Amino acid sequence: MLINLLNISKTIGVKKLYAGLNLTIQPGEKIGLIGRNGIGKTTLLGIMAGSDPDYSGNVEKRRSLVIASTAQEHHDVMERPVMEYVLENLPEYAKLKHVIDTSPDTMGDDMDKISSYTDALGRFGELGYYDIEEKVRMEFEAFQLPAERLSGPMSALSGGQKRFVELVKVTLSDADLALIDEPTNHMDYVAKETFIKWLEAAEQAVVVITHDRDVLAKVDRIVEMKGHGVVNFPGNYEAYLKQNGAATAKEIDTYENAQKRLVKLEKQIREARSRKAGWSGTADKTNPFMLLERRLSKERDELLANLKKPDFWIDQETIDTLQDKVVAKYDKYKARNIKLRTHGEHRQRRLLAVNQVALGYEPKPLFQPVSFDLAVGERLQIHGRNGIGKSTLIKALLARAGNRPAASRLLSGTMEVDPKTVIGVYEQEIDSRYLHLPLAAAIARVYTDHDVAVTDQKIKQVLAENLFDPVQDGRLAIERLSGGQKARFQLIAMLCHNPNLLILDEPTNHLDLPSIEELEKALSRYAGAILYISHDSYFANNVGGELVEIKA
Image (cartoon, rainbow, N blue to C red; front, side, top):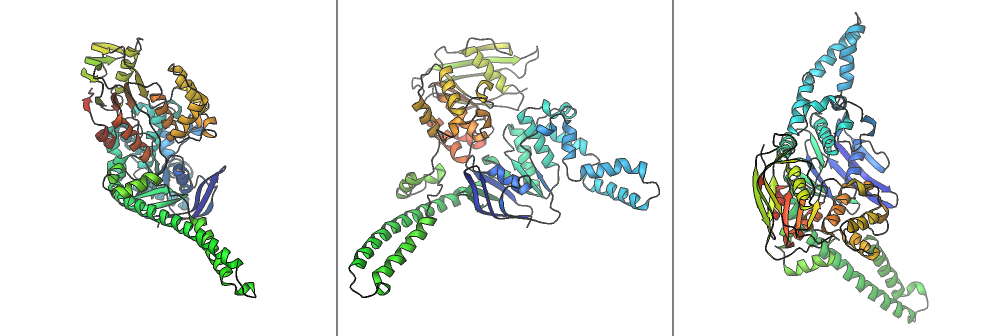
């Protein structure tokens, strides 16, 4: 046992996250931690790491356990050089480096100091730290980070680049337990494959928060957070789907049987009370109907205390294999999910055409010339390394559609966008003009910016359809929302003006599994055209379409 969480309970404000949560992690285990957005996954990693002491219960750890974890905030280290930040967070590095650097000038003939210096040199070598800076550079290149950024401050990095720095820090730590939060968001397919290979080869235990199905396919166990606790599913993603489908069908039956039992108990209690009143005996304590009422009432109260509607979700592929009777029950009780209203037009016509286009910011193009066109009803995936120019190409198309100049230069070829094309865009970063607005006000502004009339009632409806509390969540500033909540806001903004062409840039980042599937189902019903960038192979397989490779 590496770490054992016993009866963990935690509340943030009025929101209960955990109640009696129990979880044990064994050496070498690869665990995928999943659950609906906002359920407390990142908070649980903080409790394991020791950075969040505000909980009740016990956390037992193996003696001398070394934990490495990805940090979410970097306010205190923004001016720290990136290389220095990575090295200082490696286990024992700072302590050993200090001994090695200072001992030669101070130890003299002191045998204790000489022994400490010798031990530090040996330990430094055991941990592979003599060439650690070169290893950091190699990892940076693997995760698309320019080596020259290592000497610059953390403040010079984007949010995605800071995520990669955290990943480099953890993968080089050689800790007993690595805690990693959403590692593949912002990664391209090469970097993701690098991470997956590391995960498969890592000897240490790993707990990774992810809804990336390519990563979940490589874990040993999936731990799903639900109902203020956790449920364990041995095996990888495919095994989880089978177990979850069977377990959910059983839970539905148990829930329905409990409800039927409640109805029967209430009827029996009423009958006992009626007959109790007509009892002709001389003493209440011998009244059999009074005793029966007490027993039945106790059973009812215990059943009510433990009866709560489970958080049901079954993947669509499994649903297709279930009997109609089971599917009907699932539809009746399933967990609330986002409701995406997609329309688009049904008339076939070409919306855009790209012919031998090369773009750049200098005379040298970012990528080799590409050609494609897209008509109503068609899907097209743009594929390529990060930094190759995929987003630049999309921005140039949007500029052409809006009859405004693009930031990049058209070095060759032609781009045409039908003037009747209405584009909905899902971007990785939210426009800064919305960040300080409360969610409800931001939605109102999105509609206004697209010249679409909107009422307060409509805003509340949109909030509810996207799993927001229309009152409490509506008051939260966009910048304070979780990653998953921001993703749902992006979906609202993309669809508000009934577009006939959707452009999606890594739309599955931050979405939980049910929301990803709901997005995929909505896109399958969408009558317009879809142009997308995604390194989620499951998403690409489900959305389909032509593949256009962008190459240097």
